[in-house]
Length: 487
Image (cartoon, rainbow, N blue to C red; front, side, top):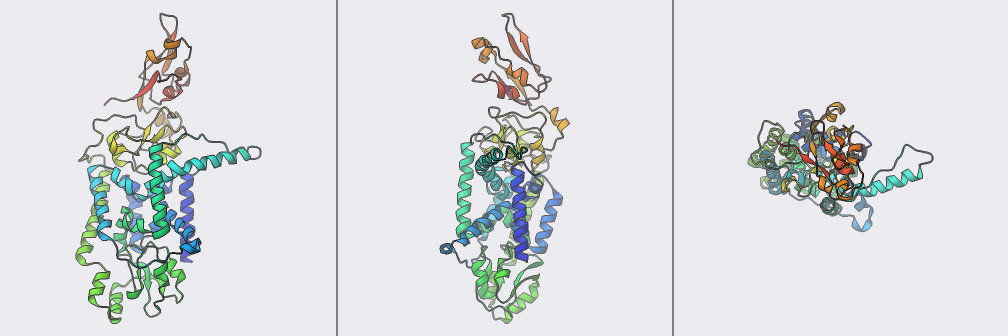
């Protein structure tokens, strides 16, 4: 029942997260993801995750993390093929790789560089895969369903399908292929070797109170549990389970023919005594476990990373390495500054997927290499809809702060600037006025000039920089464009 319950909850989570990226459900579960919650200083969520991990181990990795659930799905498909039924075996943890990556993430958070955490954060990787690759075929499928159901279910409407942002799609595709191959062949290797969230929670899980344990009096050393453990953490020969890598999938419990594996209160003293009685040498016990010195080091690294993330979430903590000090860009409504936005954004692309006009798109080098992959405003693809606040309501990391519709409608993100020599009226004598007709705040009016023609005039005090004028301008290049606000 533990195994079936865990699978049921994990797929509920996956469905909810996918629906939130599709704009169908509220992005509630996105706020439960560890790194975004850390950067948003969501202390309640962080505390709950750490307490649950201390009590029951890494349930987060098997029930809440969508990338972990996705890897389990790939592994499940691999098991369906008889010729690819891989049998796993116990391996010692690659501790220096795990904590080396976690240290790099902690230092990056302290310096205010979000690029490194974004490259390895599981939720952000999942978000980029869904938004930059899977959204395209899903949109075609949705439009096909809308076409078929137009007669009897008119509430399903077609969605616009925009061209791929090739660099973002390529990066997401590389992630998808690598993770799919690793999951197919090696189960949860990414989660227990590269993932910083898995390493940090694994540190807490070393002290977990309830965990899968092997009853040595009932175990017959058949090895079924070790062969099925995709975390490589069960050592049947010595009757141990590495709790720092166990993701609580409970497959071992369901497959054990003697019921020797159960989730129960872990008594360290009793376990040590039983293993001593089983004549396991001190050298082997030391090799299998973790020394007091390493325990202190790993715990300090995990605590330091957690502290660095919480410190970075406070706006009064300046960046030790300023990444956006001289750069200016048009930011989404709710973003305070490019520096703060770039330091908090993990490039999960949830805001990109939920933007109805698709003005938010993954950046390549528009804002510099440190902001690569983070969303930016591209007014050639869309504009910021006047009565929309989806991006500010969905950002789980606090890079875009929540705005109600009334506040958002008055938020100035840029200013439109008119270049008459590009305008169709000046160049070809074509009467246009598209920019004035589509301005939601009537900041653009058509003013008659001495030549008898009417040209656009921008009222900077009213303009909010939504980009509707630039998007609807038919001239190439656009005669009116949105510029960033000056500091």
